[in-house]
Image (cartoon, rainbow, N blue to C red; front, side):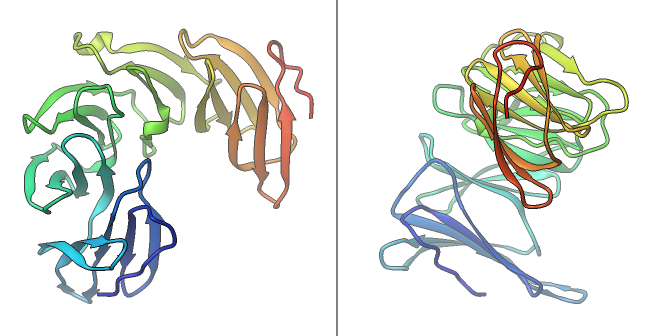
Amino acid sequence: GNLKESAGACPSVTSCSPARETTRTLPKTCRKSRFSWTSAAEAGTPAPWRLFCLDSASGKVLWEHTREWPSAQNLTHWPASPDYVVYTMENTIYVLSAKTGEELGKHTAQGSICSLTAAPPGLPGHIYFCVANRQLAAYDVGKDRVAWSLDLPENDSRIPLSPRMIRGSTFYMFTPHEVLAVELGKNPASEERILWRFAVPEGTRLEGIRLAGDHVYGLRDDDVLVRLEAESGRLVAEYPLLWDVEDFVVTDEIFYALGSQGQAYAMKLATAGNTPKP
């Protein structure tokens, strides 16, 4: 398959198929190696899926991992100690050594794995993943077992997981209908892991959340931004937005947005009440 080099010194992932080729940079670390994958399949004939680790200075292939399967998802480089590369195929998580490509472990879930993220430094060495948008689970890489699992509220959409939504030992996540704060660090009973939950009004849906300062911000599909206390989930303020929002970034003072018609704007957020200042 084709290997594509991306600019800069960070590891990157390249996915190649007959229909498209995409490159993305792996988060949070710059190292002397790059990880790329390539896959291709003719109609009715699956082709091997290959993962490469390249030296970013020379382009030399340091190791190659091949599996007789046409595609993989959720490829993640986890620069913890030890150094892992993780990916999923349907309902199975595979863990490789980032140094050698050796398979260190795998776990098969009772349903398709729809999203996955790694724990940040300071937390136990777990991979967090969602199964069929109905369950959050923590896979202990070192012990090659699921440490705990938590049933999630019924929903009809993929639940995205991001390391940017983990602060301390709290994981902030959302379904289309509510925001949840989940405790990761302790090992209480499953029903005690949800620290708080905040439901949006009936007839509206959440399209995304961001964590900034001491607050969680949620974007509703009726063009309203909600501001919640990260510690308690208490609603602090609601802000009507100027245009439909395609993507947004927020600090504890300013909301930056890209509108659906190409607008870009910033809005100063008040500390209390729904009194935004464009």
